[in-house]
Image 1 (tube, one colour):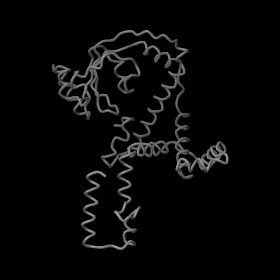
Image 2 (tube, one colour):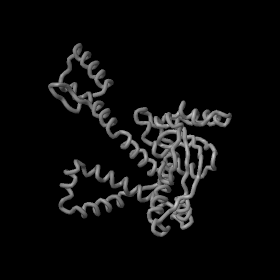
Image 3 (cartoon, helix red, strand yellow):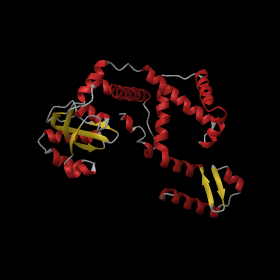
Image 4 (cartoon, helix red, strand yellow):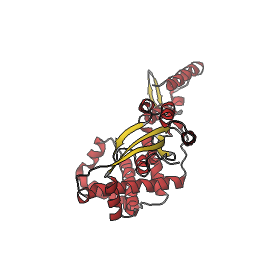
Length: 286
């Protein structure tokens, strides 16, 4: 139990000393569990669940809403998919639900989410040969870069201007970056290949010229200021055909995330609980 919850329980106990309530009254106040040692309320349960899996659950709920703003799974489609899934398990379906501690309604809800995601995937443009070739050529490059990571865009823009005005990048990084290692290294990341950094970072780092400073780059970690120090060619031992499947899968994943970002922007979701405000960080929605 955290300090805030403990304080709440203590405050409730003090109030109860002055106004004893019946068990029936307590049940009407969202009490989930009554014990001789104290009660567990819906609020207690919510706070515990929020701490454990809150951001993941909220992310799924918001993305589901975003997808449903453009795509629909009909009752008939859901029922057909549900029956197909049941047939896979046969007589063991109820046992499967019990083993997973899952209700049939929850199973259907998760199945609907999967069907919605499939509709998004089906709507994506096909990956072209040109895109595969460009990704393969990108794999032949390595860059030596450094970065400064801050929490907000305004700070990033301010620091970029300081660097453009003559401030030393490494010194600015040591003083301002929120990345612990960067405070010691001046933000130096060494040499890296495509795919080693988050996608948003990669997309910019491999397009910058040597000594060019990027605009603020948002990722799930915050806002990056990137400078490429060196570039070099890297040998790729596998042919494009050998890597084609992996490249195509990665490109489809990028297209999927880009579509989800667009859908999220369209619904303009605002998370009101600051404890959960990182739920959409993976999609870096402005």
